[in-house]
Image (cartoon, rainbow, N blue to C red; front, side):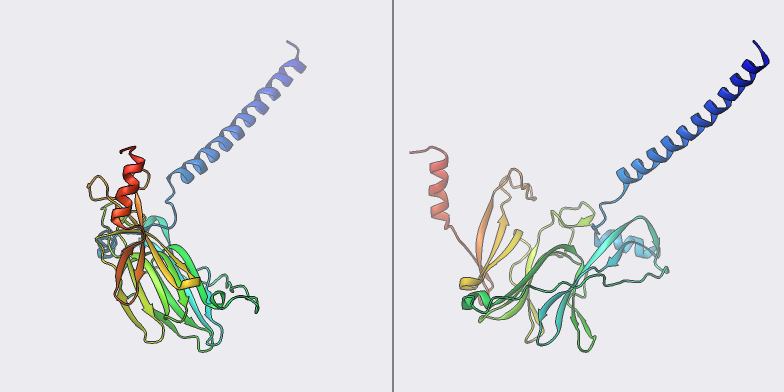
Length: 276
């Protein structure tokens, strides 16, 4: 082998070694990012009260408050509703660490056509969580009102301004009923009403029901909830294999009335069963 060939061979080995090192570094970096994405928390889970208290005893936390938007409820009063969300950290941090919470976006409802029917002029606003609280913000004064002084998980809310009342309806989980360490999505939920005129709050349903969703029909001011049925009686509602039932909410009596009566439901079941 000539000197030139030896030189080229050494140069080739050197370049190959550099390329191998660079390729290895890129592969390791990619693997690390993939692992971080795989092991990262979902980002919006609310840890259970028991776990939060255990962390607080160590002067630590896993959730941090996050806000991103405000809904304009009453233009004449410059009244907004701010859903309070959260982010789950990769690892618990010291509570002494300070953080800044910023409002990043303000969304305004669309203007309604003046020619719309009267029922369409009723104001209805809503949002879906999970949130850990709700705050009223008064734009003119800058004052805020925190609606819940206890830990909770808000899955959905509706603001209804109709002839019946001017109210905020909140679907929330007050506790970790299924013991999975987080509030929502499979915990039992209750329906709470907050009246803006009086600033009072009342519970419309108890935690014995698996309330899954909330809806409102402005045409006749009807409020509905969808309730999950624990068909196998194991204490939890499994949405893929267990049924739901629709109820209308009697706001005055704080009661639920099935939209399809039990007798009618049994008749429908017999048809489905192909029974005579």
